[in-house]
Image 1 (tube, one colour):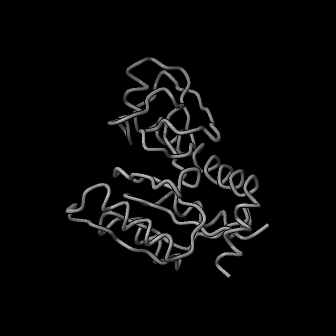
Image 2: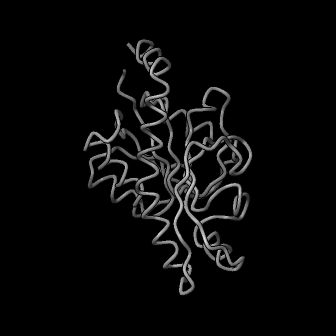
Image 3: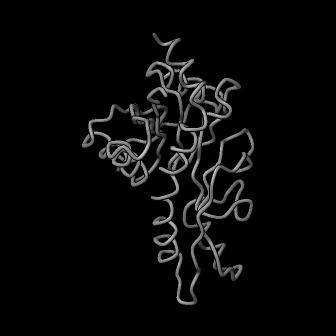
Length: 206
């Protein structure tokens, strides 16, 4: 099986990015994080990328590009690094997915989709909604990204309890603990289930 090359897209602190890099370097999956794509300057994800010696690029921080133009530039960067897979890890910008990349872009969402997904459900808004609805269980979902918000095929989910004393912060911390397990597992599942396509792309790269 060929060694996969991954680009991670991030808009915030980069905790999931660091978790993925550490997991890859501990051989949790047969892949390497080779690029970080950010849409903001001065964020923690860029600081972590530098500390972890992962190349990074910042695209359109002033938000002058249309979604289609941003997607074009983002995937040009990804392809210039010969990536096989894109992982959205706290990436908060609309990203149209080119046909050639459908089935090769993963996202992690801090709820059990299809509940609490779609436009406007991100970050603490998700956890606040879970609490407002009186749910007793929450968790996270790793899914393939399509051109509809949070509607792509689900790869895996991990659940955790919601307790009476929870705040959005305490629930977020418990969900994130599940995310640190779910995202490496999902990458491993993707890589293991797509060995032929990875081998073909590796052969094309020479």
